[in-house]
Image 1 (cartoon, rainbow, N blue to C red):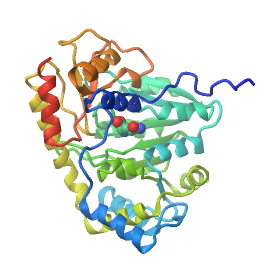
Image 2: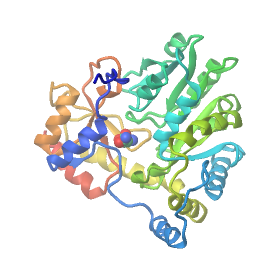
Image 3: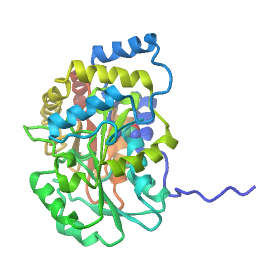
Length: 382
Ligand code: GLN
């Protein structure tokens, strides 16, 4: 028989899977894929068992259990000052990746253009292509990876349906400022352009900076899907649970897709998360200090190395320049690091459409202090 042509001919296995596998095969310390090597809060872990024992083992409601949607709405009100309706504006999803796919699918049709900012997280582009859209890539420039608003305005056209933002940004660790928000307001006012705010690192932001969620701003929120991740916030990335906050019309369209992708998300996990949000609301407020210590430890330990980098403003990733160490391209360098040095990292070029002239890799510092010390001991020898 003749198989159909691939719908994603350019796509291979994600870099996260490739590098984690390589790290496991070569027994390397995995600072590549972004996940903590420590557990989530005990209360959360215990609560899952309790809810399983109590019988929370059947389908959850399609948009998520109400107590969790209420907790999310409560958090949005407290942190970002907007009263969102748990019934009409909040949907629990099986991870932020599902939410991003559902949001793109809900609004992108054949011929629509979607602007994404490179280096861009790898799930945006395929979701746009599978929906018949065209991804318009705009390159952010190292070392600061600040957005050039004039360059963005220049790629906007009457075909632009959506722009995807991610702050704090993976992989670069950059963060949107008040000036960025003002520029975005100006850019979209009076247009029909929609936005995705990929906010999965909203609580991992440093040096006293505040996360500027699109939920805060009327002009932005009315056109936004704001997406977050419990996996990042509660150190449980393997649970694959996140959520999307969007105005009523967009939420209704979002749910039409979500209900046929996943229908609903695992019940006991939702009850456990509702419990911890209610009982330990301080958890996410403590995350900036918790991760800032790890960022600082990692950068301190790397001071004695020939890697250079500006400390990340947010996220749990640190970009480092290795040009003093090697002329290899970043994929080859990551392979060498994993196989010969025993530390896995992520190359940056895989997140970019254009070839990069930089020598940059991403390290994940969401690791125990011992893991970071062991990894840096190897890296400083290079
Ligand atoms: N978000 C994580 C990272 O950037 C990994 C996600 C994934 O493996 N798909 O490393």
